[in-house]
Amino acid sequence: MELSAVFFDVDGTIAETEEYHRKSFNESFKEFSLDWFWDEAIYKELINIGGGKERIMFHLKKAWPEMLEYKNLSNYIDSIHKIKNEIYEDYINDSQIIARPGVFRLIEELKQNNISIALVSSTSEVNLLNLFTKGFKIDPYEMFDLVAHGDCTKLKKPSPEIYEWALQKLQLPSEACMAIEDSPRGLESSKNANIKTIITPSKLTIDENFKEARLVISNLGEPDKPFNVISGEAFNHEYVSFELLQKISEC
Image (tube, rainbow, N blue to C red; front, side):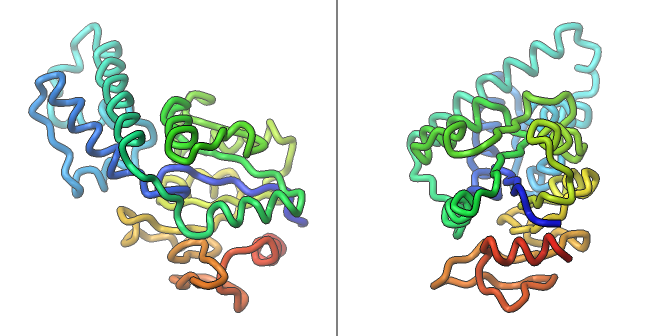
């Protein structure tokens, strides 16, 4: 089927932001006098949990199970997450965020070919806006035809709900769309929505299994800086283009 839309994940796919999130969580724990510390190994496990509040709850069940009886637990987690997001905003403001290779080039090429483009992410709207408006100085609602964030649906990735929501909003069949992801939970989410997926592993997910992806590459590539093929068929292309996406869509 002819390609009509491309869905982009955000954290780890648009930019390598997970380290900023990890540091922000750890600093928020200090604010609440918690002795938790998420090192890279712990966070690598936690990124398979969609949503920041969900990650806190997952860790709390293991590290502080008696807290599950606390009647205001939901508000407590909300408070930690709120502080974490404020710290993340400071990191974005103080850092020079750069997009991963090929991201904005591909977005512009898709727009020129009248392909709908969407952000499909489990991150909260506030974090997504901070990354784009303060990190990239771009309004995502102007750049993208649709912005689907973690506040749009009840369930986070790996549930396919966020992709199904995006398909419904764009009124497109899954066969006419492709997704670009970086993590196993993102791939599971898009796959279960019947959307063909390209994976560009991030620093935290480079060793993961992506056998269900149509193509796994180091990044989207640039004309002068080709990607490395990890698995799948790139049809002799050296960077991701509208033409390559169309070929994969037709297979």
